[in-house]
Image 1 (cartoon, rainbow, N blue to C red):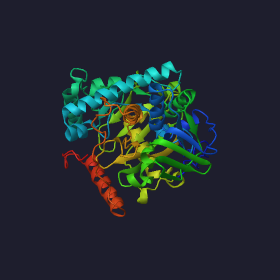
Image 2: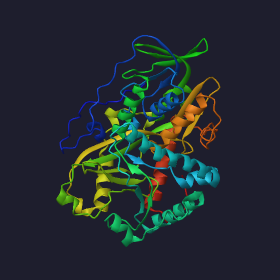
Image 3: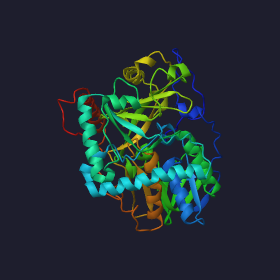
Length: 460
């Protein structure tokens, strides 16, 4: 399996930009010891991100006697969990529209209510366990930067009302929206409940809590093979084996490295830039009193938010897929065209901050499925899985942890019957067809973003 670079401090380039993930510099990591020798347990988990950690947490809450071992090739939270952009949202998959159109109003309503509950419980968790995830319960705005995008906002308000958000969403016109976020680019907006947080600190805090419950987390431990021997799952690593009755695969964008899931999930790259901390004088140049994040309504979203230390994080734009599901950070962490795109977007939204220096520019992989919704489930031989959060996994992985808990324990529950559980999946084609298809779809979606009046149909 690939290796994630994690705890080192990357040098800046000639322009002073560090091409490393900003969040990793907000809390130092000392990885725990790797696996040494063979262990036998009830549940073995591959992947020390949110999916694996929440699953272990909820299993221990349900049955403290369970012996659980997690193997993680770097450190807990080193992957997408730790490089996410920190938006705690109710979004399932790519969009509300895609979910309603694909599964119907009632099933979408149920799923959104459950993920909404996870948003509340996540906040309670970090307060109960004193996890300083730098959470700000500000919510965020879905915004339009054009008349075409306003049509999308109106559609989303109507869909949200259909799934139970009646009277809770109000579309703001340009003047009222700019009273909330003082950007000349914003033509309209509506507010969505949620929060902003530091995903790296949440992951590290969650790992500490899970360890405290007696879960064994073996960091710097790469799973080199997974086999079935005498009815038990055997995870082989360089330092030993985990022999488990039940196996959980919770690696999201890395899930394709398991043969069964090779064509079910695709890693695409998402990029972000983070500025230097804004001074009080710079902050006063833009009216943004309540610090909500915002997301521009388009295929390849653009989003912005403050960090705790008053940096501005801007992310999104085209999300490239590299041939052969290539996830090498040493090749793709830096992408100058994405840096330029996001710099231009920042200036378009906040011209007063055109001279603010970019301090970090980086990318990381998220797991995308063919139908743009996550998949959680199990096979007939006690293999359990969750992946394909499509970049919206902070709250959804909490829900996935509860689903996997119930599947592992054999419970028939509201969680185990959600619309994305054990459903038939569309698969991606083999290479080079997969790469050609990804490039074609990217070009089409980008064209629609630039010329929305020429293609009005919802594509994804």
